[in-house]
Length: 158
Image (tube, rainbow, N blue to C red; front, side, top):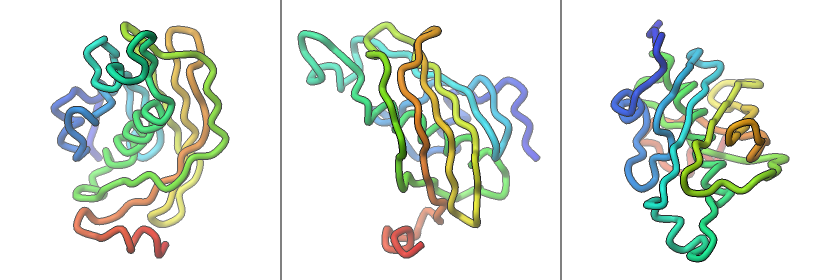
């Protein structure tokens, strides 16, 4: 088993995820229990491309991007297991998400995911995001693991 005693830095993150700027939404993973749990963060600056249009006079991180950041962290938790090398994690659903506080430039969005269940290539995770001690959002994320060369129809057929 691969050991990540110091979490994952951006280079290790890019080895596990195909996402790149401007859609890579995890800056660092501070804790990972491969296949089970991960904690990480996204530092938000005024230079984030989504702040230009959401909203110009009052920049707020879109909720869907908070969910995407959590889904990416979830992929990192699962894909950090060596047997999943070359596998792609895809978001298949979100449930019961609640948004509690706005996330703005200058915030450090602290992310945490934990596996609830896994059956074959399909799984579900509990996901939370905070800014300091304030809950930004929480809910559950469903995902599927697919080979990187598998088409979308393979995910839909599951």
